[in-house]
Each structure stands twice: as structure tokens, then as C-alpha cells.
Amino acid sequence: MLEYVEAIGRRKEATARVRIYAGTGEIVVNNKPANEYFGRALDQMILRQPLMLTGTEATVNISVKVNGGGEGGQASAVRLGIARALTEQDANLRPPLKAAGFLTRDARAKERKKPGLKRARKAPQYTKR
Image (cartoon, rainbow, N blue to C red; front, side, top):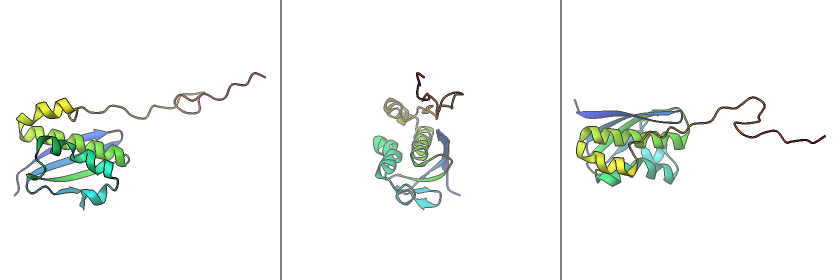
């Protein structure tokens, strides 16, 4: 049985369950390699940020189950999960991760539509007559 550290990351409607094992730097998201699951280079870079900052890229294997939301939200949820798991694994990594903002849950979400408006804030065109 492999020893692992588990953490949860959320962003918008996305939720990521992240498990960190000792290993060689392999990242698996929903049973696919991370670069196959996240097509955009930006998303791949986002989820590797905590690893690059702490220098743990080649020392841990990461297994992720993520659902809900879109690609960008999922990538950010995975990043938060990885950062939380790293701090649980080694408390000395907390200050640099916190300073970089990787331990902060991004609470921004879609604003609700208001009655009388077309969207959350867009008002119908004003007609004088």
C-alpha cells in the first residue's frame, strides 16, 4: 500500500481531489496524463506552478480526480489541491506557496442574473419614445 497525502481544491464549479505520492514527477488527471487531459499549455502551466515554485516536480507523483466546471476552473482547482497537499506533506513549503497566492481559494463565481436585466448587469437598451 502506497502512502499518500490527499487534499481538495475548488474553483467556480470544479472540484479536484488530489493525491500526492513519492515518485518521479508523473501527473495523472482522471486516469489520463495531465498534458493529454488539459490540452491548453496555459492550463498545464497553471497546475504545475506549485511544483515548480517548491522544486518538487521530480520527487512526487500526483493522482487527480476532477469534475465539474470548465477547463480553466478545473486547472485552478487542481493547482489549489496540489498546493494544499504539498503543505500537508511538508509544512516548510507553506510560506512560499502562501506568498505566491496558491493557498487562497478563488471565490469568484458567475454572478446571478437579475430580474429586468438581460444578464447579471446588462440592461435592456433605453428607448426614449
